[in-house]
Image (cartoon, rainbow, N blue to C red; front, side):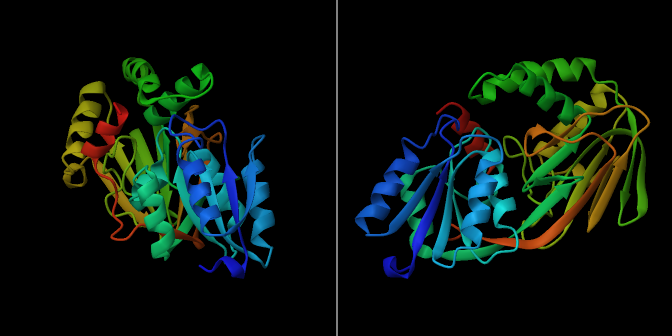
Length: 313
């Protein structure tokens, strides 16, 4: 990218997690300024502000790149604002989970940021939608939704992985395994008790390879449904997932499709990208190649071991 061809828009969430803009984003800004790039820097002030900034940048002919520094929520808003435009997107991961950044193979340091920028490798990125809510990575219903609801209810400012431990334990002890129905491309594929994870990236949370076949740019939704009626079955599924053997189980249904419907006769919590999701029933769709994103050279998802180590960094 040539400094004379236009300017770079930076969207920064000042309330992001521990790897805040003061460390990563500020160093990257200094790097760009030394390279004589023209910058327009915006700090988000309210929900959906990142989407508004990105949508404005999307229609500016002289905006050459949008860089977003924040967590999964800020990145999700930015992607939805750029959807359908030709503006490249670059991530500076600053959140707790950083689901999409981990999937793209980003390492959370200045050296990686410079490598990504200078290599300028673009890859298409799909955007998912559940009812009226966009998401870039994964969603879930049942146990997963219960955990996220508890974390969100207790949230005061920034959170860490430690904030998830007690909600996971409480949800595990109280989860009653409600019955729900799943349709994939208008075909009923599940009508039983359990939980489900869906989306467009392969790994979730601390790198669990739940949606093993997922590709964030293939235009397909992946869904993994775990049939289970009790806590021992849930533990078994969890262990099989850690060892990447869950899809071989007769009590696991895995599909790739264009649209998904999930409904139930009882209330079930949902989540999207680690935030509370919309009320059921859910109608989930995908917008193929919604944006173009910069990826690291040799990009591949960050593994479970590395993500666990990051918790204690």
